[in-house]
Length: 369
Image (cartoon, rainbow, N blue to C red; front, side, top):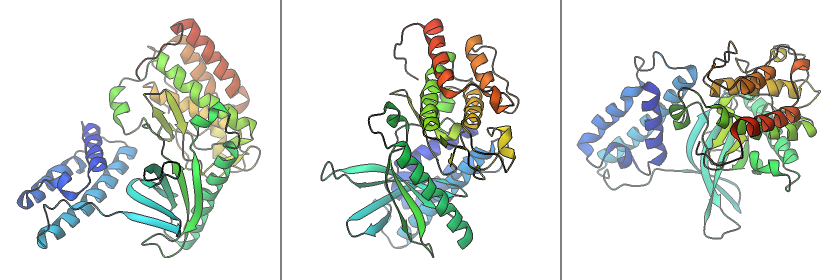
């Protein structure tokens, strides 16, 4: 129930255009509505929540407090009820560029990520939805390090997008531009990456998780795996390893059966030293060795662990539900073998899943995810 309430609150914050959308049009009732909206964010409600969901709750609480402070200011000066639009931040790296930040959607050690918009040069008078990633850091040294990570992300995405006719382009984030800029409230410049908005949802804290509480079935898992394996094969051919695949970095467009891998700041050239990405249940065992070279096999492992999570299994133990088709289970478990040498390559896995789809599920027909 706690997760359902968090998702509903996140949706409300995403849709709000003014304080009154959140707290109602009556000044006297605003505080009561605020308290009611904060109720899913209490320690008692979140006692059984995962670390990911507690972090989401912290972000929602901070956003609510900021909007309620604005509401209180409007009440005190008599303007509450006029439905004034919520303020936005605009980045202007040059006189010809303007990127408007609408809402922060994540706040990590490396960067803050925002939804926003920019003028659409292809359609004058219209706006284009974008994702804005701004390097974060509690010290000048950390900010410099994280700016370098985001700058590397930009370089890698440009390299992977160098062949516009390649069908894998639709599975990769489309970087529009990148620059150093001192954003409001920051004492020094930070790397900023502007990325075309990717429609879709991750599987950790959105309604997809609610819809598939018992786990995604084998037929849907098959196309999800194929989409990501196609991207991994594309990356391997170009000597790039993602380095930090996990469920929250897989954006699933349910309507068009498209999956995009995001958050490329820890990507490395295959054969070079891996970057110090946060390690956890989705990390390949070799990555715990700081001298380990980057390799595609590590991404295969992390994808396998992520698919176990999507299937309703336990990534920490490699438990895959028995309800999943045997052939699909065998492929998943082959991806999480302890030794990198034992894991199949992305191209082979793609073809194997393709065979399984034809064998078990017949001809391709669209099914709503």
